[in-house]
Image (cartoon, rainbow, N blue to C red; front, side, top):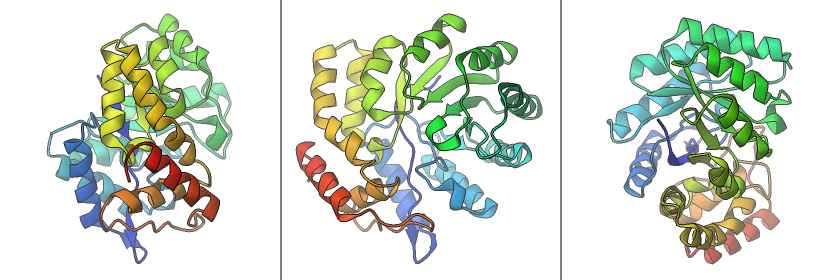
Length: 293
């Protein structure tokens, strides 16, 4: 089961290409600083701008560099069920421990369509699936009753959720509708503290890219029921959580990483562009507040 601080890794680019050397260093740095699992090719990893060949190479390099030290939850989502399955087949073959699969975006399927999509994936691949619900990006919302239905149909396959709906009541909905064994991970850094209090066990995090040790220590404090320590760390991280979204993500997090991680470029792929000056100022102030620069 997955828990703790799990960064949704950026994909470093240099001169338009995947910067494999920088990515390998980033993976090592994350593990050395307490990250409990890694997610390549998620939203923060700009997966929607990667070709399938690049997508698979990023997963492959991550699994290779991790070398069994922590689990890899490979981003395998797509609005095309068959393409999602293609990613899952590759991720399973190269040794990932699970697939993070976002709700199909753009198509706007009904709840029945969402069930059909994830059922097909569960029935055609052995890799465990962590559902990813982020309605602000996909428009589609995986409703709690749909999550419960999928988890009950495929208890060995659909094992958890990254929930970025912003609705904290869903943690209790899922826990009561499925059980404590279902792995609930916050998809919003700023809500990780109340989500953990409600029954979540960690966060698939943007901020952890930049502050892996602080995020890992925060999650450890939550797991130990040390509320005083968790609040103290949350207060240090809180401005950074919001600064990560002062402009279109992942612009701010890539800028932040360029400030704290040697030789990592803040390059993005179109249609994403570098964050504006106001966002840079907010990031810099938040990094100072957290003691990172």
